[in-house]
Image 1 (cartoon, rainbow, N blue to C red):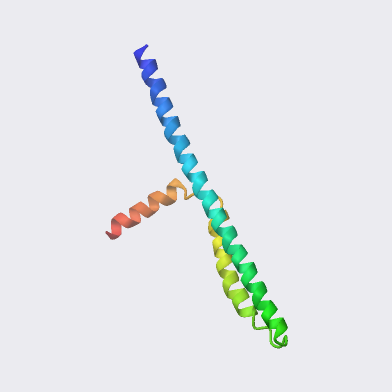
Image 2 (cartoon, rainbow, N blue to C red):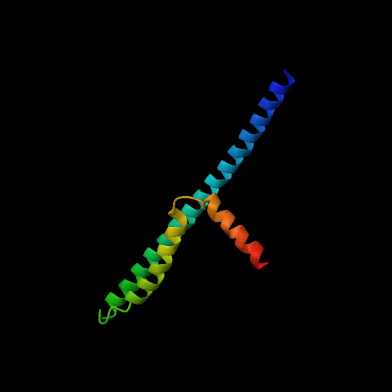
Length: 104
């Protein structure tokens, strides 16, 4: 009987820890998405303003292409970091640990 109670308590503790870990991961993902959306909004607003300035000043050479492309690359990497699926596999982690142990 005592063994069963001990197993139940361990299960509750493990489940509690897992839920906290999952909750922390969920909060981190939500924060990353909010940061990305803020970054995307800034990109759209600033570049719209630059295109507006270009249009008002004579619409010659389309110079806003440079910030659009440069900042767009940053937006792409930010999106990749925010929305990529999956965590590193256990094999990848083990390989990195072995590499670090060899070099240090």
